[in-house]
Length: 374
Image (tube, rainbow, N blue to C red; front, top):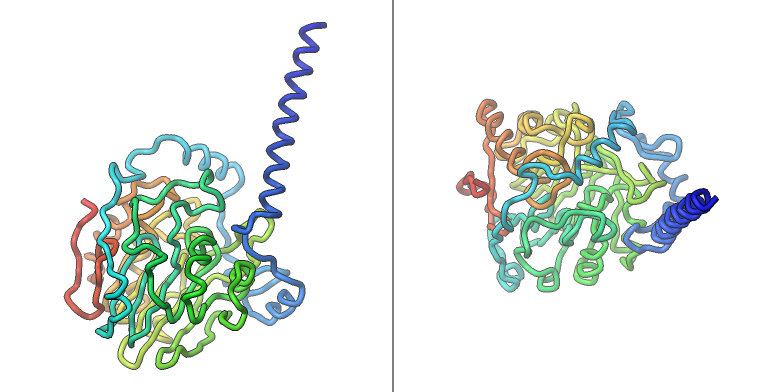
């Protein structure tokens, strides 16, 4: 009898712990501002006119989805939290610092500064533009749910970044759209350009709707003398457990009268790269995803060799691998993406730029292909 009572107490204790965990998750999901906003019925009705919207959610062309099943997801999650060789640097990545006044006063040729992963500061035609400015320490809704950044500092503190003409977001995942970064930036940004639906998160975080431009694939707008084009990508979206596909994902083109720049966002390899290249290329510079891949989710994150081929498809004069160098979001060694890309790029005669984090890169000047990660 005592044994049965003890088992019963243990069972009740386990049930209580599980119930508490569920309660914490429910409270977090419903009240945490990091998860962003919720798409309204009127917005869903509006998005129904998009060719990329079906049955209440956005989808890839041809209905392409990640093929990884639930059992694969569980196995991968277990591996992710086990010790994997070289998935992180042995010591923090060094960062080159940037001066706030030098950014504010810059009037020179088109240049960009990489912040690691997919975050950039682009200066073009006297405009200052941030692309996917994820400046947080952890790409997750809570610090306990993700791995910390590979560097201990950024090229410049977010608070010291001067007035920004525009911010462009590719999609709403945590390693691209960061709640804390938006809060620090929103009052110094003139305009936000986002795929359909992503504006709901910005509005939830206090950005005025008149500062948000939502765009569908193939739509174009202007920022004074610059053209901004929203183009396809092959990925997915969602910040919570129940809103997958609620917002659109995209790649972007930023174009002046003399230069043409492409930003891939996150994407699996597909025919859209050739289509974009045929329609809007050639590109002077292309920032293309190269990292956080796995054969189990190759539909939505391409392999490094495909990154090189995408540069060929786009007809890019120079390309830069992005989506690496900042966070562990996959099981491969942290330098593997750029190493594999370098081999394939040489085979395809693709010019690859690999500036350090924080290093100024002037487009069309001397190609910076150093091997700082080695």
